[in-house]
Length: 635
Image 1 (cartoon, rainbow, N blue to C red):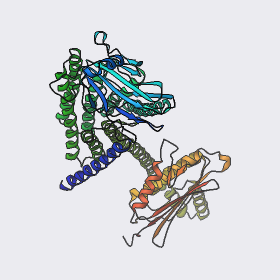
Image 2: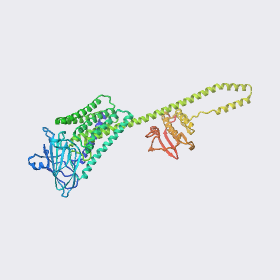
Image 3: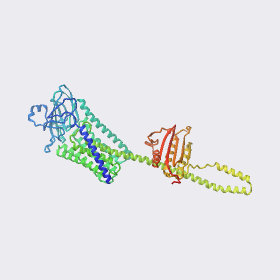
Image 4: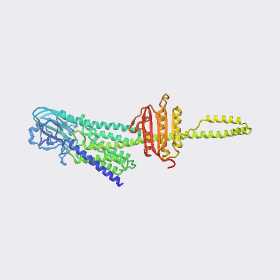
């Protein structure tokens, strides 16, 4: 137990360190806040080179005011303003808990561009919840309607273009009455239209590929669930649906304008359901018969539904306090779910495949920690920390299920092969029993007939009719030689029964069997292992020659002898079908995947300390086996 706990702690520490290292690299190299480029100072940004600029700050901000360029120009001295960075505060309350995050605000930034006029673009990501975009006093873009009297919420990722040179004034007037994360929460991107659209396109393509892969995994999981009826596969399929629902919004917002609710409420709902499914799948994988994981999964699912309904309600009545409470509960549930999953994985680390689960859970917990440590993070083309953590968690859960399925499939194949071999052994024993019964009947008949033969011989002898006696004995001897003789292939009765079985099949098909066997009755190799070797190899040989035309003279040869304390077994046969192999493993001609028979022979030989070779030459497949043995005298 102490060893398992030590191993789990080392694994958690290693995965946590690796995950935090990856997240730190993302923070440094895929982050709009840390990207190279000039930054605005007191509302002015000098752009001297043709590159992408991430407009993190300092923006000139006018709180509680929805201004037009003309109003600002005429009454600028009358309005209060301050400089802020994008993402510095959670909403328009500017971090003041006593103020409402709802309302209006105006962002202003002065760009000093090169004197040569050219076309520029600005990409705006999810400005909450409606805005007007002005450039040099002209309205060039609008999403929703920020006018308080005609307010219409609308969220969409947009790219706007304009011609500009020299000093350019950019203003964004925002109104929000439905989200506590109001205003501009995501960094605008400025550059040439090609650059801005390329960054936007790469981000969309990355999200689309991720969603497509998840969807294909979902379809495969549904297919496997239909085939196997495993409950954990059903939960994993639901988990894939939740991941798609949780991760779909960037692609959706790139093409379709949506409202704050119910789209963001659904995102939260899918997030809670995702954890409920992970808890349920973990319980099935760990074979836990307890009720607590089931109860927790139901609580998480119910919490997701209730919070979804509460978000709709609080957003409808514009209750900032209610939305803040929901946000806090969501954060607590994230950490609680991650802590529970990690606790279960550490507690049951000795369970099979649980290390893989622990890796995924630790990676997700690390993403939560990174999200708290590096708050000034917004990906350029990648995903958020928690999205990466969730992806790793889902991947590890899926990998665990895949390993279980693969092992179950392998066990099914092995069990099927074992059952088939047992049936063949029963057939061999039945055939051997029938042969013995037949011979016993023949012996009984011979004993009965022998009395009559002896009486006849005695009569001839008593009457001294020696010539007639010799003639009678010669006739009787000729009849005896015509009787079919019983073939004994070797002194080992178990192996002899196996060879008798396959020799009978070859005889029925009219195929030649050549044999030269010097196998003692007792050697140091068990009868079970010997039967595995001869049974699997002869079965493959019989299957191979059965498909061949009799005109090609198919045959099977068996050679066995002991030399220098080594058992030498050589079995060869002709073949016409194509043989596919990968290194020392052969693909089966009876089912998908590798053959079980040759693998079983190799395993037996290796266990006995010998070696086996498989070779093909001129249409002949040959197997040579060398095994160290002790003869009966040495055993």
